[in-house]
Length: 102
Image 1 (cartoon, rainbow, N blue to C red):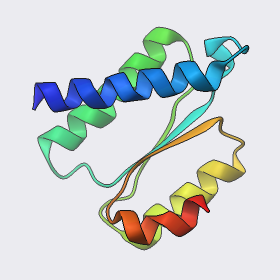
Image 2: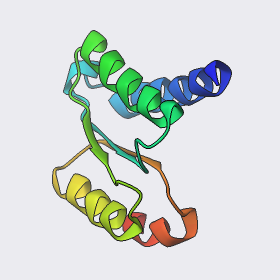
Image 3: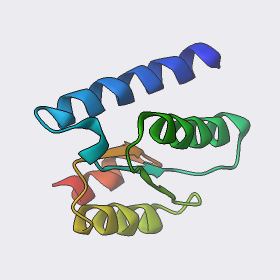
């Protein structure tokens, strides 16, 4: 589980660095939609993402879809409307979530 979580966090870090470009990392506003916090792995993923964001000094807008695909699609639309710089999705159903990112 730790290796998988570290891989996810490495991808998040690289994505945020790329999104920052010429901006300061503190100016980057990532949005995270996580499918649920119904298992220790997902709780840890959510908590670590928030902790790392706080440590690096940027604002992470994180939302729990609570296992509901309609809520996750709505959450993604809400995050996009908040002018985030990057959207990270831990999708309940990748095919069903794709319209939110089109």
